[in-house]
Length: 260
Image (cartoon, rainbow, N blue to C red; front, side, top):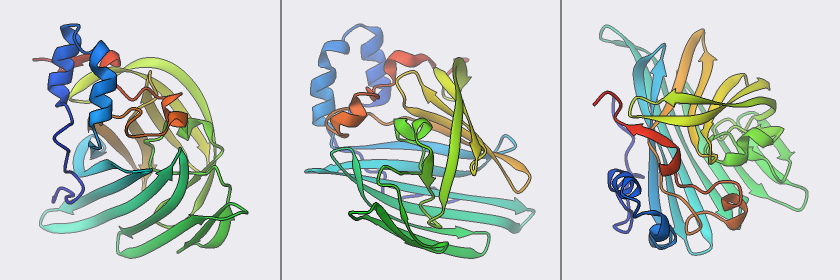
């Protein structure tokens, strides 16, 4: 398995997560958060892809602030081998452009078990103009990409697949809090059940940051599990997002590296 690369660089201004946890435990982080956040212009979240509990791939969500724009890149690759033969392979790459909390550009590609897909989307006066492998149409202006990271994912009735250009009509229910073990830490998370075109279970920590997604694909349970969270607040995302997502996962982390 080749780990996705090319989008994982982290600016020197980012504080290492282990150091952030140590500072939080010592009571030294709270007053320093605004300065820490303003210093960070790039950050990366990393996750693993599991099939029936076994790792089959890796992924990342890389954030970069470029003046008034927030650029979000998603890169994921997974494969299933049977002996020396690869029986399934999936690769997805996409890029989102945000300005003041509004999606102003989206493009993506996917290689899904031998089939290739692509899509693009741009804002117009009527909504988001989508061109993709599933056809051309105008999506609602407030539609969110199906990349899970945005805290409002559980609030929107429509989500846009950033590889095929398919629109999902969904309904979210739940929001109950539970303790979730990610393999590298235990967090307090809210569980949401998605129905409609997307049948999945999603977890977000109590500040709204994405933690895990579970769904069924081709008869197997597939989990995307966050193992290295980003450090995001007002320097990285717009105030409209910060209003509902403080972006700092330290307060909801119960233990790092459980069992040690």
